[in-house]
Length: 634
Image (cartoon, rainbow, N blue to C red; front, side, top):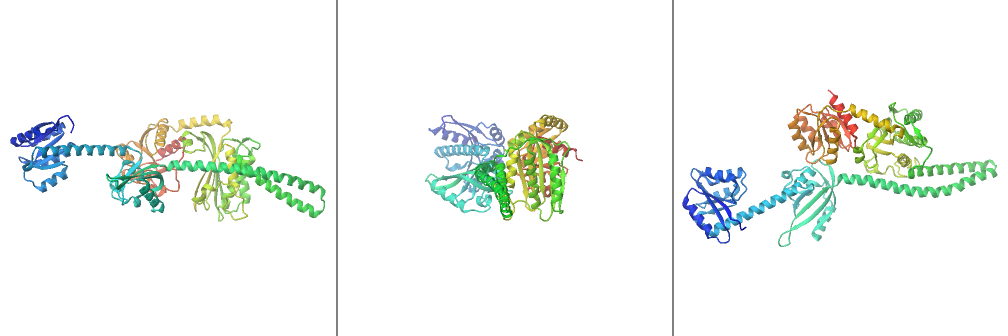
């Protein structure tokens, strides 16, 4: 024990017992004690409430009341110090009840002496300190953002921190005692068995794992496993620390895709250069032979040869356009005129079963570019749309002026803040399988039959768009169609106008002090959305998950105008949050937000309450416009 005296409160209605206890404690040489005595139940409660003692000794018999009752009431009032119950009968049932109620120990007064009393007090204090240390460590683990849990050697969960609750959605009560493999994995693969073997051999393992949340969302975690051993070096349990890297992996995929395209471009550029060196002398030789060989058959052969050499040269030009974006003659272009031309071509050449739909504003900004190359971009996208609808459907071409802000640029590595025109080419065709959508821009990759197409169409489109400083986004769903969004920077002549229009629109979209509840588990998105809304005249409450959102809504239900909620969150996802809010207020107005359009069927969740849907990444302007539209609806 420490050198400071141990402060003890004895609760006993017999003064002789107090004197005896005082004498026993005075005999102890290894520690100093300060003993205080109270004789009644009520006096004991008041003294315990002061929280000035290290240990409490409670006699079982206290007049009409009992020490067991006092024990329960003290614990209920928040007493943290160890309590020892003293009994005179050695009643085992009472002792068991005392331990259940929170006693640190129980002592039979008929067998009590100085040594036994001192040992019981010392052990009680040491146990309490150990418990407090464990609780402090557990509290620190709960503060950690990582998911931390402990599993025994039979895969049963022994500990589950708050970080694990946030990441997986399972509360500690739901997770404790469950089989972790059944809880977090769809299939227990051979890979997990190899991890266990590595853990047994080395005592630790780390790597990436694909896991499932409570709501069947797939996440990727950086996982660190440590084998916990007992004092005799025998395996006891496994400590697991998991960090959610799902979003990081998505950005890595974007980056690797860009690197792959760049590498393929470099390779294609080198091949194109060599092919040009091969084709140039052949074409010149053909033209010389045409001047020397005048018979009809030779001229026919030479014409076929010249045609095919030129076809080869055109293919090389396409490869170069993909590789580095050939710099043609550039000028200020009104894309509206281009789209109208393409509409006319499609109307005359596409099957009648394909319906054309155009939506182009008359004030569409201009771009600085090569008219021939941009013509090729939109023709190629329209032809692909046509081929995706062999049974007919709708081909939509829409354009709009957009100003991409810092918020959007942070969520999309290809974008730069500034004014763009966004051209959307969408079809209602077969759609693109998820497993190949990352490959569609690769040179020579095609899903068409042999002899139909070269596989250079989309790679050329990408090369031209990137050569113009733009980027492309693709969304597709099997059986429902595909949408290509082409973003091209507006010309410098429109930049000033774009900024002034943006400022005018921002003024028009300002709020009138309405209270908005923003729900998102990503701190950066939550804070940026809050700043954007507050700077535009709104008041904002933020919640980092569905549970916090429900609590805030219950508190401010009468004041909140709109709820803006992400659909993929830990603990309580967007779908559950929306349904809960709807039960609290059937008239609640909700804007759903997600980066995965096909994963969530908003109409199936709460069609009357989800007033609009925002796809990440979104601009502050899009958020304000959507918000104003929802607020203004009756």
